[in-house]
Length: 389
Length: 75
Image (cartoon, rainbow over all chains, first blue to last red; front, side, top):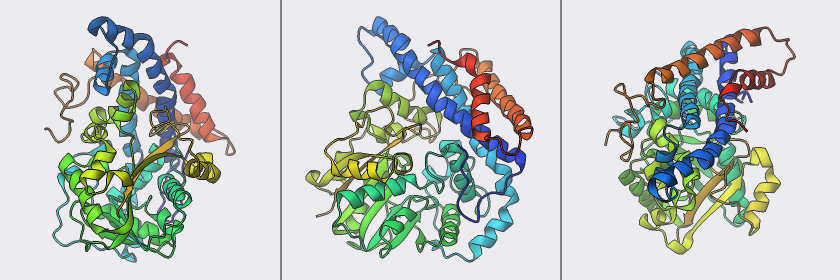
């Protein structure tokens, strides 16, 4: 489904650019729904029997499933097409971003963003073309990286992240409000916010709280600040690293992230959770929307999500998913008893009542179920967090 | 560890150019990209010929389902 961005900086594509974007969204839908189903079928029909014959047992891990699938026609087709489709996402928006440079700068001129003089972004945000995005989060000139991300995500997400690309933030915030109705943060921090698309829902959920959206990459922050202002959302966009927060101890009530931790090297990630613990006030909440952990998934489902680690320039993805989220929180200083995890239905697809039901009932959607963490029809988001006591 | 690659990447899954290899004939990986580019350009021409009130998203899906049907696993 074609997404029309909901702010004044949205692209004004030529007819050809719009058609190319629509094609890319549609081919991604074909790959992630139809070819993914074929992949699953091929795994059970061919790969498992082959693996069993060779090793005397079924695949027992994501790595085993990966080895079992390599060379299978369904894997080759799915993978070759998915890599090319990813490149086409960024290619389909590049001309428009370049053409809009002056217009974007004009929007950003009236927006406040707090950049740190002399700050050097870490290599994981600058040296790797993360998810095959040319120039990663810091490349190009001006706001190009931010605009590329916003417009590219609109095509990449096939409508599943909402018209404002904020379904994750909306779903998570609604879940927390329903599950913890007495929780009333006054100061909220989004770490690794990119362009703030999942930060803004928290301001909508808690309008009296201060929202600080942070990231290491200046283009996304500048773009995000303008994007928020144009949508009438009051938020600060501040350049800071998640593993060295420029904030006093016990100064915030929420530390949130979405699809961020898997982009960090292991040591940076551990320090990030420790920093979250440090800056949270007692009674505050650390909450992450992320990919579900391998330890809670069957081999094929685990491998299916680990695919990005090998083929989509997400080198820390699998290493993150091999970690236990409870252990990560404990390592950061949180008590094991204060950890919780959940699966929340996409609020855009399933509606607010479904989110409320997930938050208030004992029925839990399985972490390992087919649609958890997958950007495909029927998407469910995995989240986890810990309270600071 | 190479910045771009996970530590446990199996040997032989990337070519000398750093691009992943899927098919046993490396040219086929590049040909898949060509096919997808061609399909995209054909779609651009197809969409330009649609009536103004056409459901373009539905038409794109139908186009892709038709063109790429031979890639599907037998059911």
